[in-house]
Figure 1 (cartoon, rainbow, N blue to C red):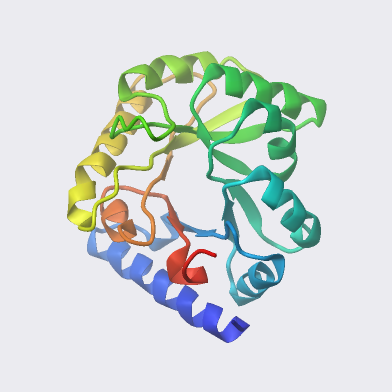
Figure 2 (tube, helix red, strand yellow; figure 1 turned 90 degrees about the horizontal axis):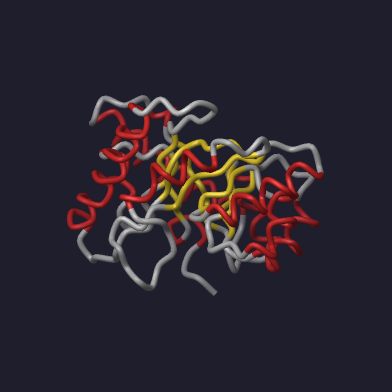
Length: 232
């Protein structure tokens, strides 16, 4: 697959983002596209970067390490969007500009420790399990404010917002209540005025439902299939 195809796919997705944003009176520039590049080889990802992709979303530390070594000189930001184990924290802080999936104080403390070693302030999102699915990571809505208050005390961590992976539905409209819930939770946390945090980012929406996510306030949409094609 050549650069031209990536440019076409990227144009299609960014046009949908732009039109959806304008339809609900949002600034299209307030929404960023995370191109989910998990399972895709470095040469394919390089073509996507050449085509204009600026943020890459990866799920697996081991897999990313190989690709990062090859591609880190290129002008792209790396975001971690998978489940992160505490023993992989040191690799995560070296590679990722934003980690979307922090859901415990234990993990945050490990990231804080590793970030301090390299003089970095690690940007994170708090993953919230709005659907309360046992198969998915994330903290419950009820526990989110408490966790954020605890993490806000760590010197080398900067909370930037919230992330969710709602239950899967074939119809995007059925996902809307979960996106709405995350936005309302964000607003509740904002009103608490916790020092040293900002919760402006909402990472929600994927290839099948990112238009609904944008309508509900998403600032980061995670799109893989529509750009890279089906997973390997």
